[in-house]
Length: 247
Image (cartoon, rainbow, N blue to C red; front, side, top):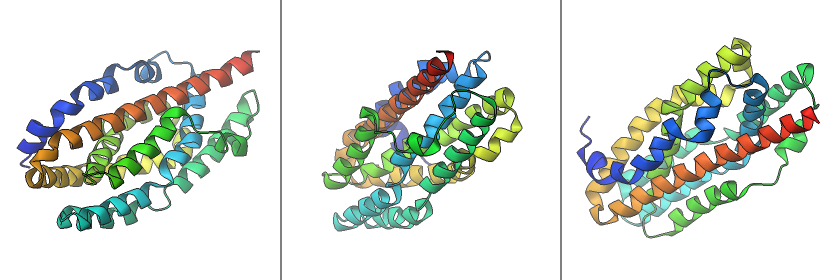
C-alpha cells in the first residue's frame, strides 16, 4: 500500500505517544510476567465497566463527523465514515455483558464481592470526559476529518496492544477468561481491517487538505494520550479494589 503521506505528514505527530504503548507504566504493569492475577482481573473489570461510557457514543460521533466532512466537500472520506459508523452501533452492550460476566467470575472466587451495576454506574474520570470532548470538538471544528485520526489511533490499539493483553490474560487467568472478553476479542479481529481502511482515508485526507496535516496529527496524538490515561484510571481503580480486599 502506498502510504507516504501518512508516514511523512502524520506519524511524526504521534510517534512519542505511540512509544508509551510499549513503555508506559500501566502497559508494563499489565504485561509484566509476574503480574498479580487479581490485579489483572480487576483491571479488566474496570476497563469494561468504564469503557461503556467511552464506547456508547462512537457510532454517532463517526456518523456526524462523516456528515460534517461531506458538507465541507470531503465527500469520499465523509461517506466512508458514515458507512463505518453502522459497524460500531451497539458495541457498548458487549462491554456491559463482559462486565457482568467478569464480576460473576470474580465473585465466585474473590473478595470483596462486587456489584456490576454499581461499577457500570461509576462517575466518569477526567480522561473519560476529555475523550468525549475531543470528539465533539473535532466534529464541530475546522477539520471534522480529524475523526479519522482518532479512529486510526484507537483502533490501532486493538492491533498493537490488545493481542498482547489477550495472551497475558490467557496465561495468567486461564483461557476461559476469553468468554468474558467479547468486546476485546471481536475488536482484535475487526480492527485490522478498520485500521487499513483508516490508513486509506487518512492518506486521502492529507492529499486533499495538506494545510490541516498538523491539526489531524495532533488530534490523533491527543486521542491516544487520553486513552492511555484512561487505562491509568482503570489501573488505579483496580488497585483500589485490591486495597479494599486487603483491608
